[in-house]
Length: 208
Image 1 (spheres, rainbow, N blue to C red):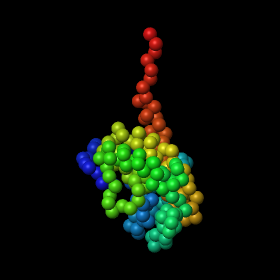
Image 2: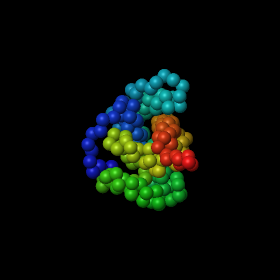
Image 3: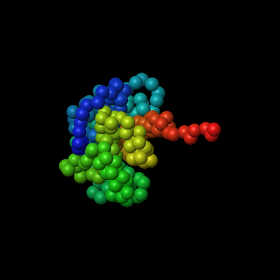
Image 4: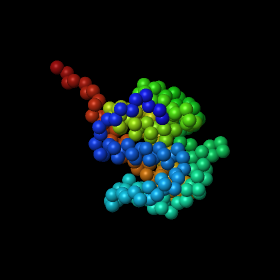
């Protein structure tokens, strides 16, 4: 994703972590991890509680520690790319309309253009790919936080968790763990952004 401007915005540690999680999910969905990234993921430490998110982090770290980058390259192609399509088709158009390059792409492009973002010419996937939307969310958190709730609810809330749920069902432990992490994380984000939008909804004044 190319950005018209990238002026740093001061954000707190929790939002910086949220952006990092989105960026990691986008990276793992868009391409297989190399050995360096696998080592990084394997060394991640999660909170030692029983939440779905913490358990997903632990599962991903364990799967990364046991994984082989060359094998994951084949698994990534099988699960998320395919000769025609992968076992999981991570596009909003597919989940919402059952086809590719449909209305959701147009809607995403319109909003990205308004925000000053455009697809990197080197990237072949349409803008409604889940990885691209994760990258956009990371950028919004860091650069235009007031826009993040609306963007999430318009472009991710209706299908992102379902896509991650489907990825969690694949037979490769690493990618199944990515799916479980993504599902738990997007569920948490959905609660956050629904609350954020609810807080700013206009309430009709009481009659005189």
